[in-house]
View (tube, rainbow, N blue to C red):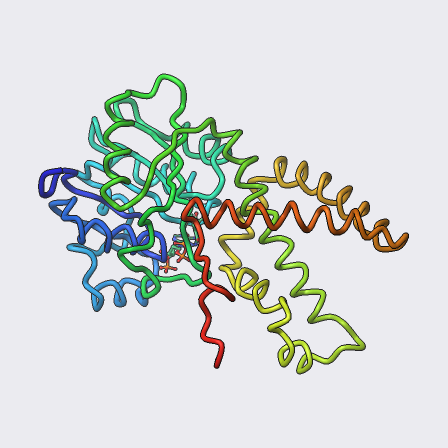
Length: 306
Ligand code: NAP
């Protein structure tokens, strides 16, 4: 990969995901210029202070102008309007991509605004933390993490190869997937687990006969691991559930059936059913560690004194 190989990069949105792209692109010297857009003066000031962009813009079109790769790093509900806003500024041959956690809705909302001659390749890095904003980004976020691309049928193969090389340069491994399948896979691996975390933390907060201070004091029993996920950005996750409705509802249907079976096993004292499930789930965790997608350290590597 030669220095500045990807030319001018425009990041429409410089929160956790956008600023991490900037840091990782800087680290690997992928771009000749990194332009960043943010709507708020606070985020623009933070980006200025942290210095991860070469130019900072208050409007999307000026950020996207002359860019070779434009990456939309906004909440899913904003991807359609943002595409409409940048469309007149996009140069022929540019790649327009995004990082949204839902892919069918992006194709539905952004696709119609993409001008002829621009390569539209939706994407989704499977990497993140519960933090948001320009201060939360870091260069290693995408290292050894998957990035899924969902190019519409007929997309130029050279453009797909170029975007693949870009994400590889940021540290990722890349897989191409059908967008509907993406939404189902991420529904089970990410969206429904977040919903469960939001729900259980909400339930604990609403319990009448267990106090808030008891919930916090004894949280190491498992609850605190749900609170990390349930601290994720409310705007982002509202948009995920509004835009991946079908897949999430389909998975929840199955989830409810399986939960009912577990309730029954507990009610009837069916220890074998419980033991067999818990044995199977333990094996899944082992395979995630073996695949390098999680640390094997006990207690997620937390300091036991803490
Ligand atoms: P974030 O840290 O909250 O950043 C969001 C960015 O969008 C900020 O630049 C914010 O600008 C801007 N923004 C929000 N609402 C806007 C609006 N109505 N108009 C214009 N700009 C707006 O979020 P993020 O974690 O980077 O997420 C960005 C995208 O990445 C989302 O689509 C999410 O689904 C996807 N994603 C997230 C993760 C994750 O774990 N966080 C992982 C993979 C993909 P201001 O700061 O100026 O308000």
